[in-house]
Image 1 (cartoon, helix red, strand yellow):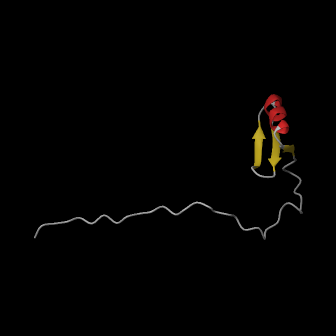
Image 2 (cartoon, one colour):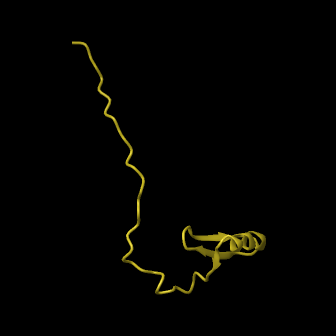
Length: 67
């Protein structure tokens, strides 16, 4: 079984477990990379992650008790 490391500019990194899967991924813009060799240009620490998700709305439930 082959383990092929792939990288996509939009989707990040993934591991393909077969040559057929890797061939399909390469057709869709994925490129091979070696995880043991770190590219200094691509490993920039100054890029902030983008979170476009809205926070969950949590409502406080109030129990009504009769006095």
